[in-house]
Amino acid sequence: MKFSNISLTFLIFVSSTLCTHELMFTHKEINEQALIIEKKMTRDRYIVYGLTALSLAQQMYPWIAMYQKGKAVSETNAAEQLSMLQSIKAAFNHLLYTKEGWISLVQAGVSLGGGIVISNICNTFIHPDTLRWYVHSHAPYVLTLTMMKQQIVVLQDDTCEADQKLEAQKLLHLLYDRLVQQSRLMCAYMTYKTKQLDDEEKEVAQRTLHILIDVQNNYLFGIAQQLKATVVDYQELEKMLCKYQKDSNSHVNHFAVIEGETIEERYVVKQRVKRSL
Image (cartoon, rainbow, N blue to C red; front, side, top):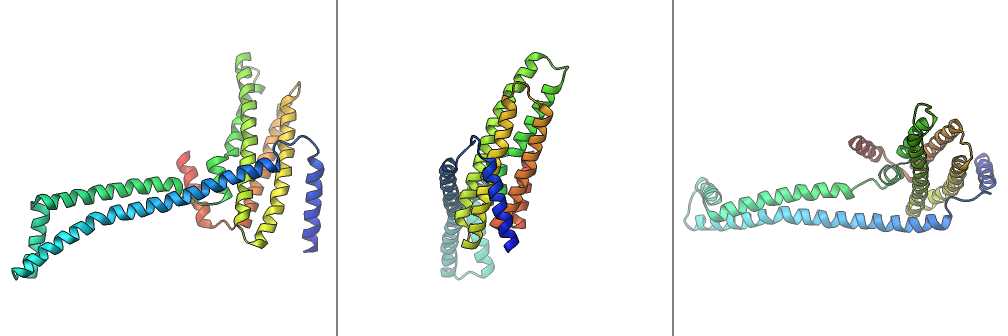
């Protein structure tokens, strides 16, 4: 325990000394974004509850109507003192050879189709409430880094024309801005999720979050300085991007342990990644 406390103190000291430069984003910005994320997650839950209730009602209504009509037919049959086989036959005849019966069947079919549509809509709002899912859906920094590396390859290629290099340079700066936004979103989600944890996990998550914010700012500042340089060292820039990705992946995995991400939740995210490729 003492060793872990010393290590944590050392990390905080290091991260605080690294962040004496301009910040790419502040704690205030992250907290504001975290409130937006919290509202969105709450909205998603209520949408799922509403769609689920609507789906159940839609599927049950025609069957209730058919049951009531079948019951009326059975009561008529009982009054006529028909046998069970005759009653069943009469019910099927009513269902298949009368206008009311066909209306009931169409209602059941429409209800079933509507239920499938509602179920597909629900899939949009039903998701694991984990950092890994949020990163994939709203802050895909890995994809952004991959595209940045592709532009670096173009800029290092002597066979490329000047216009191509100019476009690659513009895109590289735009992607960097996107990377800053995605980093902010990742920290904001961790801020939101930290509030949902138990007291013991919350304390660990808060410390991890503060370290992550400082480390992210440090990486992003270094990348920005390289992009602003008169002569950009693209090999060094690519190394920085690789280090950023490796460290960010490590933080996502670390937070997954803190928030208690399950194997099932990770599997769902993997399936969504496959479908999006």
